[in-house]
Amino acid sequence: MALQQLEDIRQIAQATIVTAPDREAGLACAEQLAAALVCQGSGPRPCGVCRACRKAAAGIHPDIIRVRRPEDDKGRQKKEIQVDQIRRMAADALVLPNESERKVYLVEDADTMNTAAQNAALKLLEEPPRGVWFLLCAGNPALLLPTVRSRCAVWSARAEEQELDPELRKLAEGFLRCCAGGDRAELLRWCAGHEDMDNRSLSAFLDCAAACTAERITGRAGTEGMELRELLRLHALLERCRTWARVNTGARHIFGLLAVDAIADEEIRGVAH
Image (cartoon, rainbow, N blue to C red; front, side):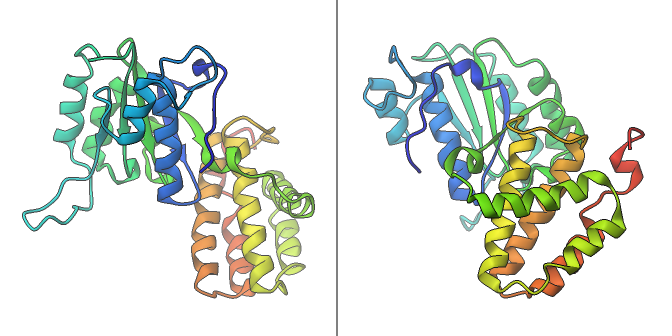
């Protein structure tokens, strides 16, 4: 990932969900945000050359703390982040930073936090201690509780990384307008009209549609009346479709799924719809 510098670190909310096309991209993005927060440079951050940036790049900055899934007695990572880990993080967050003005907790695979762990994080995310940031790396933010998501901003590595092809963007925007409109018959017609795509075109469309959805989640594009929970749900659906496309699931099957599931039920869409 190319170095992304920020003119103003106030762009980074103290409680932020970091999403990306894959786990490695999400971690790389979160690491850059963490480096920006501890950077000692006077210009755009991270500068990449100050002592703090060098330590961050080497993974040894004492004020960037990683929270990972624990390991079992055979050294294998467990499936979930446990509530005790979040409680320890909450206690440690009250301790002043070692070297920087700021302290950053980078939670890897945050969408694997079990329910108790997520509930334990709520107050921390709603009222972070002064000078403390929480970066939650989540490949599928929809797995996080709505109460967790509502307390966090969303930062999409995808939206920062790539310039979308104009033709693909036009196609993806058409799909998203159908989803936003809530007309299932119209969405069915749209999907049926594109189910003859070859696999390469299908993958490119799904990538672009997920990127456009991420732009809406992060506020870089208008939501067209869709609520955040709808957008997060749609983004998760598109990510699943991207995974299936990579194992050669055909366009007919994927567009059939999108026609059925891309528009949320009324209870999810809310009374405004």
